[in-house]
Image 1 (cartoon, one colour):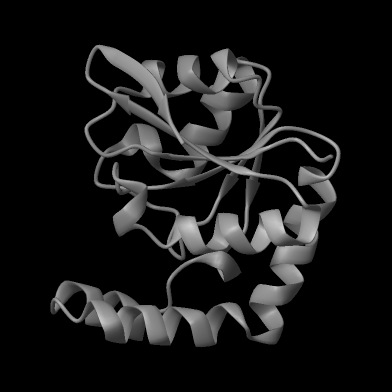
Image 2 (tube, one colour):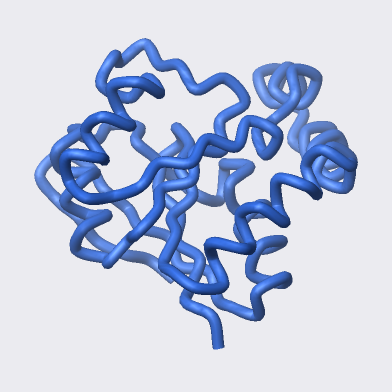
Length: 156
């Protein structure tokens, strides 16, 4: 059986706490599934985040094709959850997203990976359907890491 597919969101988390949670979980590669790997919090922008991870011995893999397309993000911002789900499912079924899933599955089949996005609650983030699609490919399970100010815990 493949290792579990982990996910994490950095909303409200300190960068050091996030890295510690990843290390504690045995993560080998963090897979950034943001369509735009930029953040208003500079420590979570692609370059600084990848440097911090490298210093901690964790690989960084950015797969923007697994991020939410603009139309889906707009639906989510407008409170249209059903529209978001429909648009993201169509995106995930597309050729580019499927190629990115295949690339992620290569890693996930042999090592512990963790999908990163912003939202703290995995129930409100596109990383959950991405993780489920990845787990279906690798026959692994999905586990969500929750990290916040001063605490780290995992949820199943």
